[in-house]
Image (cartoon, rainbow, N blue to C red):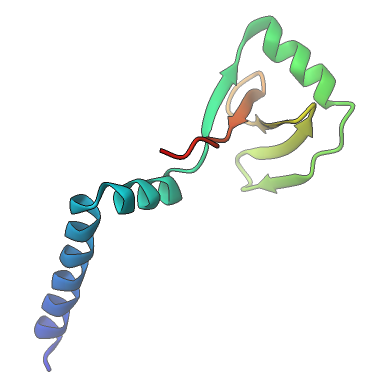
Length: 103
């Protein structure tokens, strides 16, 4: 089998998987949720300032750093937040909104 034939088979397989997802709304919804990740609500103004103050009193459960930005993940009062530093003068404070409703 040549490389061109192998590549053609791979493309055909990918096309078949995509069509199966598009033709079955349940499979598509499940796949889309897997790649989309949770929704985020950006906190702004006084709300962001207040939450940032509150989160300074809580230890992050996860931190990441890619040399350009640093992100801390927090849990507080039954909600999850992420704070990203390095995108501007002020940190970006976001609430992570998990979709628990299953259609």
